[in-house]
Image 1: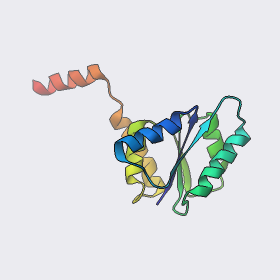
Image 2: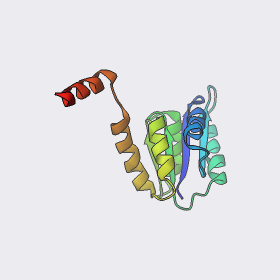
Image 3: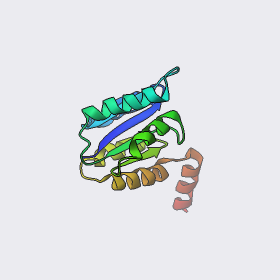
Length: 139
């Protein structure tokens, strides 16, 4: 099973995982890392390594972070660059996390990346555009 590590500025990653548990129950082989004001990039790498040491990483690791190029992304990239079976997805959101956590037991890292990318496209919605589409379908 691929390990999932969610990283973010502030407590977003912790709360995202907790929200996922509320909806789908506790997920195995999932961890999170928070990056707090005043912490260093080296400290963040150490936090990732601490979480990874508690997870089963033999099938790979997918880091899911909040912002491309942000400190959680950069710290994860310092670990992933030396591991072929690791990748990073930036822009994590709850629908993406739920899809990934449900598919992680039977998917590879690359398959999970593809799931994350397609889920994002499919779950970002506009109320007004949705209403227009419903109206068009009724015609």
